[in-house]
Image 1 (tube, rainbow, N blue to C red):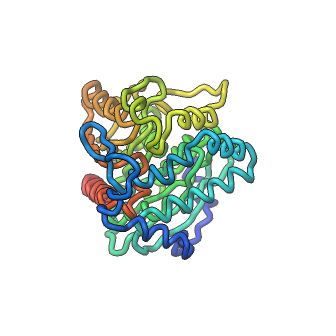
Image 2 (cartoon, rainbow, N blue to C red):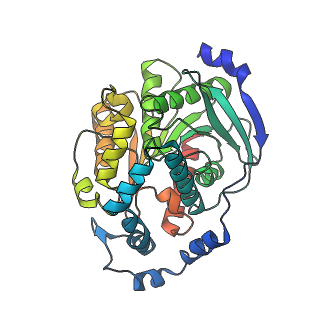
Amino acid sequence: MIRIIAAAALILATPALAEPIVATPAEQAQIEALKQPEDWFIAHLKGPREESDGVKLDARLQWVLENTTRPASAPAVQAYLRESYKTPEGRAATRTALDRYWALRTAPGPQMATEDRTVPGRDGNAIPIRIYHPDGLPKDAPVIVYYHGGGFMFGSIDAFDPSVRIIAAEAKAVVVSVGYRLAPEHPYPAAWNDAEDAYDWVQANLGGRVGLAGDSAGGTLAIATALRARDAKKPMPKALLLFYPGVDRVNDYPSLKALGSGYGLDADNLKYLADQVYPAGVATTSADTSPVQADLCGLPPVRVVSAGFDPLKDSQAAFARLAETTCKLKVSHIRYGDLIHAFLQTTAYVPTADEAARSEAQRFGNQLR
């Protein structure tokens, strides 16, 4: 903590209204086409409505999976992409394309004051953060530290800017979005160290009622940061909000077998990402990377948000049960049955995804207050 306070004078702060990723006319036309009535999508599906646990997949999502996601998951396409990832130029191009894709398919968040800063990391790196200040907040408003998803290899503050704006506005909280380092340039534990260092800075400089939130890989970082704070006897977050987090790298689950191909998070891609994030010979801890195998006792209240067509949903349910039964934690688990993994990046055209994002943010803000 002393290290963070002493380095605070080195922070580079540039208050500004962040410039969003703006759609080209062609991109805007694609997005508008996704907003047609549900009946249109049902009439144009290539196959019957898909179901999991008795719930139908949202027709818009099924249409996108059939026409965009699954063709891009073909072996030849994946082999080409992975070959391109081997070069810095290839990774940069892919990350830029994914940032645009995710940002433009997220409902635009409201305008609000933002501050772009860097805070010092323990490895001598500068960690970018963006602080969101919704209008009209009281001085004692809660603070949410947010970690974006992307498999520890993709994603950025800009890509997740629209969804973080929604979270800040609906939670009525200050939100600090963390731009942690990505693999393979920076394998484990770089992202975890950045997540913890950014959290320490927030506690030292903003303080108050601090919650941790994240989606997918960011949910993993939120759990790990809380466990590190517990073990170091540092100030603990007041609560965790975990959107479809990665929680188990050891066990297989029925949902991974049933939904591990064709739903946007294929099992073979999970293995590929893991090989980049955790290269051979790198020792990890379960608390950081596979919390189902970790000691979870002492965590604050946890909210696990799952999707019905996420191959990770069974592991998330197991995590929630374990935390509640073994450690007697205050755990709540909700599953939005018609949605997929990464549904926060579908809110521009899937009404139930937008409703889920907003209601979960409102609930979390109320909890922190």
